[in-house]
View: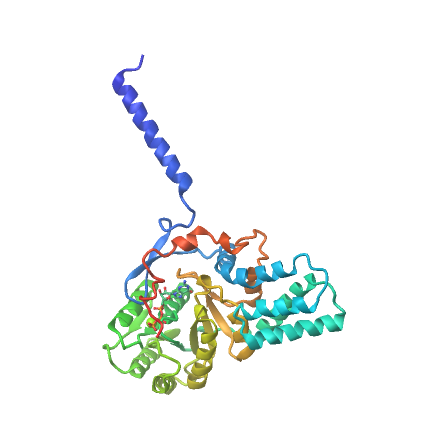
Length: 395
Ligand SMILES: Nc1nc2c(ncn2[C@@H]2O[C@H](COP(=O)(O)OP(=O)(O)OP(=O)(O)O)[C@@H](O)[C@H]2O)c(=O)[nH]1
Ligand SMILES: [Mg+2]
């Protein structure tokens, strides 16, 4: 016979074991508790975000997950439209046009894609609707590859490369700079950040937090000082210290405000006075959730400051990713980077092949099939209102 105290102890141990097993079985891989890190956001407060370890497979999965909403709007509607059809008729063309136009590629680009498809059908006497899908994918690939461009990256022993980062309020400039700083420091480069958003003290602090976290030095001036002077000092420090990369932040601004746009060209000009050939990149950060408005932004920024590349952020939170096709069709400026989340690994070089594979969900795992299948970790990733429009309101 067991004594009473021994029975109590055994029961307690059993209960504890059950609770432990229950918790383990409910843990979501990649949820906030696991591997969560604090990253600074626009308000200078911290958002918990999931840090993807960046394994190639994980990266592809993340991209596939991030594009779930866009896939739902473009590819899944296309599939639904073509399903069970036997002939290509006028009704099909009309509906296809509607799918393209409402998927945010823009009216001009939708018309262009449609004309391309029609000419293929005429040329090849195509009568199988299912082939329209593969043909559209091939046309998108040609278009995106024709605009492909890569960042002017630091090279050993050749002095710093200078990047100036511009865009409207809240587009994701400072976050993108933080992610870039982290990327290049981890590759062994020495990086200097210029806190050129001098309009708000919080913006200077935000960049400093990113710099500290990434291991990059930050050149800062007082709030309200001249952003061109900050850029001047950052590039001067970069040259003097033999840094590999200098990235200058700028304040968000409305692309329609002439004098603010002129300020940007002054920033760019000043860097060239300190270092011949600078700036090597003027990166325009566009928020994909802005849809067609982002195309108007691209037009104005390109005219004002000679944009050399686009970083398209927040593709994860939107169904409007089709706009990347509109950008490629309407501009001569390559999309060089895409943001698919707030985590430090969620900034990726834009690779048209990978992008289209993810968009058309060609992964062997079939991740993200259907817009409802987004991994719960994406939803869990932000717990501190980082997507709250109040944090960084677009003007
Ligand atoms: N989901 C998602 N959020 C992002 C991405 N990039 C940036 N953000 C978020 O967008 C918000 C604004 O980012 P900031 O980097 O402060 O934007 P900014 O352009 O510097 O803003 P201003 O300095 O006010 O002009 C922050 O909450 C970021 O975490 C992305 O790729 N995906
Ligand atoms: Mg900023």
